Length: 444
Image (cartoon, rainbow, N blue to C red; front, top):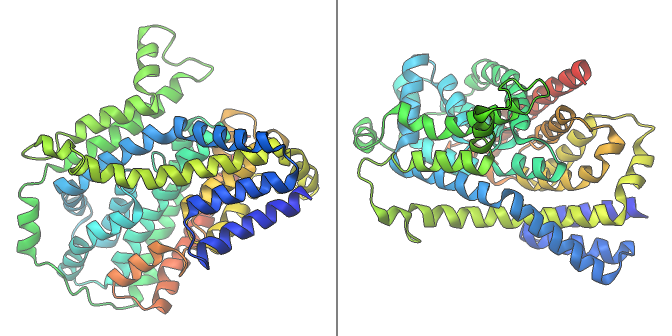
């Protein structure tokens, strides 16, 4: 009965968010309460579970999401994203715009939401593509896939952070496994856009000329300065995880203590945020106000946090109802292992469109089953998170807002969008999952 109720709850989340256009926050809260009522959880325990799940999730990831959004806002508004693209193009060469856009999207989507990142970078992408004499199909597809990879796989983007918190995984290890899984996917994506997407011609038709873009970049920070707020927090978080290895590579003295403190996600991202405050050429305290860049970032963060916390409430109800033992007994004969989180997340992503909702819902389903499925060690937990995050890429199509952002801003027809973006997310999601499966098989 619990399994049937779980399937009905998932079906409700999918149908209500796609067909009825219900906000995911409402869909997840309603599903949580309805599941508790129908599964026989005591009435007072239902409210307690919802409150605890919601509060615990906000407490674990809320500040991190807010700070990440603030860093993204400063990169966007200061023009730092533009100079990052220019610097990459100098390295790759002007004829390699697709590769530059792929790598740029990969970095930009760590602090900036994928939809926003595509909107920010499209004028520059069109201008660079026209100058290189290439088809917009290849460069737009590369940018979209690059944004998708880190949006789904690498913290501090909201989905992976929420999944790591829900499943008790070390955030530094999740960053390492996410980056590891994404590297083969980057190579496959580059082959896909250069060998397949480039065959389809779309005129770049720049929306802004070279002079207009140069005027925007005149007040932008340097490329090195723009990369620092993104890279520093990631390095510090990873160093903290390395410091906690059983071999104690940094010893147990003052240095290890300091690394343990500044490597905490909140502290590391706060340092990144303060660095981001130096990006504008002329800093104004108005930027930090409720109507400034920080106010804009908080508005974006609030929506993400509410959905994430609602997913935490849904997960707590599932846990308190005893779904872990029931699902464990039902699935043990199938021996799906590390593929189970991927399959569930891919099904949810394909059905309802949002990668974040797919990640959060899958984490809520898997977290009570971690011990039953054998995800016990820190590395096993991190790989389980990367597996479900890989599934959250498969596949992006017409029920995904990002599909429409990419197709409409790149002059693609729906058919072309399926040939490029949808197929690309399928291939890259499978590639990253195969990498996760290989590492899990060999080392776990």
